[in-house]
Image 1 (tube, rainbow over the protein chains, first blue to last red):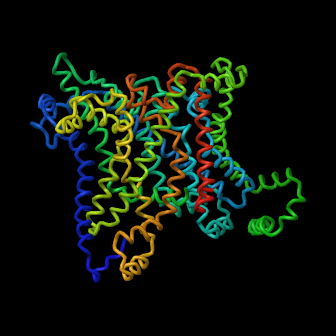
Image 2: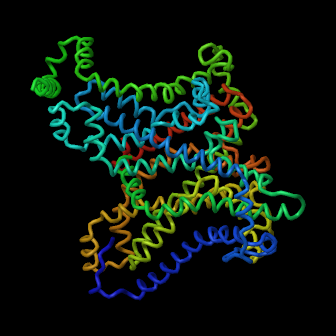
Length: 297
Length: 326
């Protein structure tokens, strides 16, 4: 940040600018917060009042939990959460294991094929087969229709791998040398020396991979057919985008159509709040990640 | 002890004696390396398998763009048809439409959303209160963490006829309409929601570049009587230039790669006219209508254009400013 110099007095123009700058940012904050607040408040509101209300809703209109009760009735949201949790945990674990393994192998100076392998890997950052050949490849190895289709074909993100490789190359050679003299195997060196020394980078990659799994829905849509395997985002798409709230509304008539809208708001809240609650604590890791990526990229 | 010597020998042969190394036969070198690094070979195996199957497999699969692929004949068994699918795409009724939409969406994203994070970073940098600037940063980063599906559903909820945005605009005499059913609103909604979601996040890179500008430059400028605006023009912007250029190259490289996810979530039959881009066309033709070879050809066309764009921008930027990606 800029150093403040109080000795030189701020000009009038400068002070006017400061005031406008603060007003500008208050408006920016409002533009971001108000839609989120609207959704949060509407989810706790009476559907009829929401219908009648004009403009953004900034606080619940006659507080009610009806929409949340309806959401709780939907078994798909539970299975969606469960499947997403499985994909996030197992997927991220596989991502990290393979990324760390790959980074270790291509950062070993004594390995004859390190350059060949690195080139082979970097090429895939600039060329890829595209959606259709990728789909057909996954299908041809018989992964489609299983939850592994969302995990195995995206097991290594090459960009993340390059970040990991840079981190490992920066570990002094002497660290591994002495372990090697003591007769430690590569696997042992990797997990007892390399991983602890690069844990900051690994933390960043963990977040990246986990967020990717949490958010992704497209591969689930094209590869999965059984509804009980659907991750949360795909269930959300059905409810929110395609407007299918029938699972949660019983009965018929106008009431159903009305509560359908607030159910959507409640679903958004249920699916987003966990992430937004965790994020302020992890923010600095994410920021660090952006910077690692930027330096490399 | 023996191992130690072996390592030392290896170091010598790698660094100091390349001439002698050449005399050893290739197959023998491989054999020696294999015996010495058996474990590394084993560790490389899953990695290699992953890249060959899931990254090179699809690349090899591009060949179906030049074939008439049918699932029962497979990648290899299908008949070669040359450039048939490319010709069909160039003569396709929708060719100009998807091309135009791709260009319109990518260019307007570039023009409108590229400068926003830079301006945001510059203004955050001018904030005097550290606390307020941290609040601004935390709030503006937040939408980045909301998933695409949820963001798109929020857009839909807020832009329907009786949604919040319409009601807000109706104060200014705007006729309420379900905006996402109107082709003319598609691109503005797409671009503005993108700015809303990512402006804060994309400003991180610029903010960090700003912190690396030498504070003495500002002090010197102040002594010379430069006001804050002059400081911005003569110190801050030149200090950001290389970051801006690198980000611009990266963006232009991705330009033709208009993501399909957000568009698939937002468009409908009524807005295809303005919303259908190459990647969504590939999706509809290939995965919904099973024209495998045709859509693979369309995808390949897209990748080629992308690659040419990255390559050219990089070349130009190397010439103009000596900043480049590779």
